[in-house]
Length: 294
Ligand code: CP
View 1 (cartoon, rainbow, N blue to C red):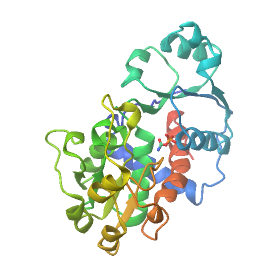
View 2 (view 1 turned 180 degrees about the horizontal axis):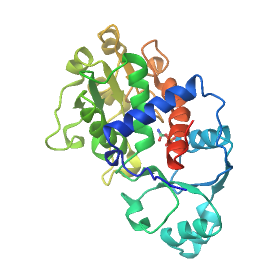
View 3 (view 1 turned 135 degrees about the vertical axis):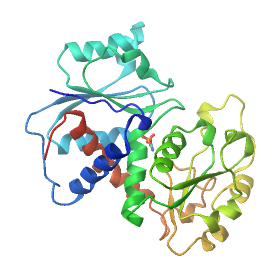
């Protein structure tokens, strides 16, 4: 069995990005009920909290006819000091065909180079979130039918966001323009910045991000109202968006901080569509992992 991990979006060629999106589109239509010819066994190891990624991977696994189990670090031998490598090597040894891993450490997968079963990265620290990036790409493609010349502004806590890193890499390679908006200290040097007032008139896609308080070393003190007014999507700014512009957010959302709560389900919002697309994309990622054909 030829296996393929998914660790970083930058590991995928443009052809591979497009192929996953094509498969995800097929899963939404004529291949809706398609299942693997073999019953694979997968373990979902979430060392950090998750709702969307965890349960959309699980939904994808079940829809594909896989058997899946959830790992709980607190009741496992991790609590006795077992390393990540030994934990994953154990899953390989006892017969699992693949592992899905979310872990707080950037690039945790560099310690797992000797593992032979596919590793599907469900987010590593502030590093990468390839399956989120792919579902974001699918959502943009669904809307515009292309990435070429699409203007995307990523707004908020860029420096702590694995979503921003993965999306910048993929979208620029696919021909989109990517700019950034938010507090200066949260936007890395060399990134193309703009104010939120400029952004709402420039962008086809406004991608909002949550403030990742759990990754900040210094606590953040600005009031919610002040942050929304200066850096967020208010109703006044929403009214100035282009006619065909869309709003995206990987979620979880801090309602009333990066976005006015009333806009979360506004006509231009694709936030819940992104979540539905997450299942399709994760089915395509699993299909690729086992090199299975339709
Ligand atoms: N977008 C995302 O990764 O959400 P979860 O943390 O709930 O998985």
